[in-house]
Length: 83
Image (tube, rainbow, N blue to C red; front, side, top):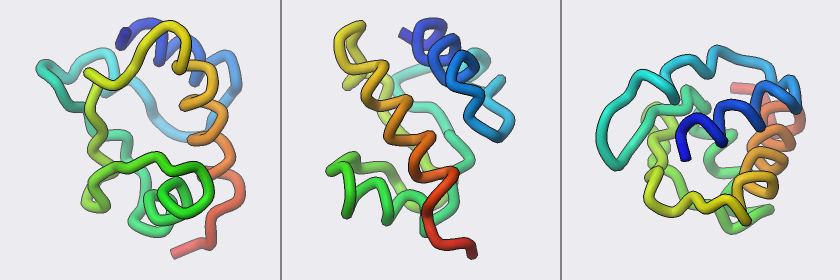
């Protein structure tokens, strides 16, 4: 799932450093999203991440939802209010 998610984020050219998605171990990964981006994801797309560091659970990703999650993250990175 990590590789599929990373590949989709890169394919969409989402700004940011996403290498940590591949190097984190365990159920969670830090996305580096800001608290405002996390809030935007929750309010607009009903995606729930931890505001500090944008920590997300990898267990919720599936081959079917990775494209939608990556597109929603792209939307938040590009359109959420700036900190």
